[in-house]
Image 1 (cartoon, one colour):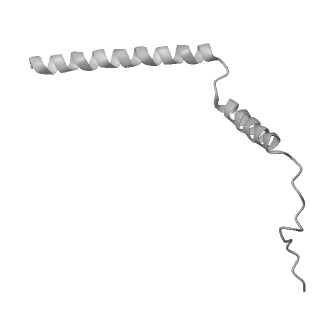
Image 2: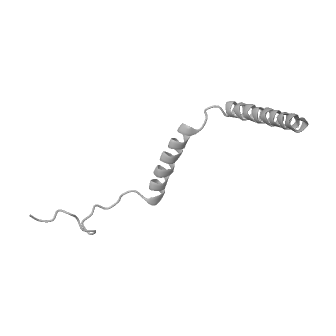
Length: 72
């Protein structure tokens, strides 16, 4: 049986240019990333503000608890 693997000289030439290939790769990456980005930036900002408020409340609560422990 003969070897069916192609040598470099026998391989089919690539017909797309570098910019076209790069665009295709970047477009695919951007499309993939869009799946993970929030649809509503205002909603994300609201969520971040709510998380910030929760952190502030937790810090105040822990400070209050520390003061109570210091008094005892």
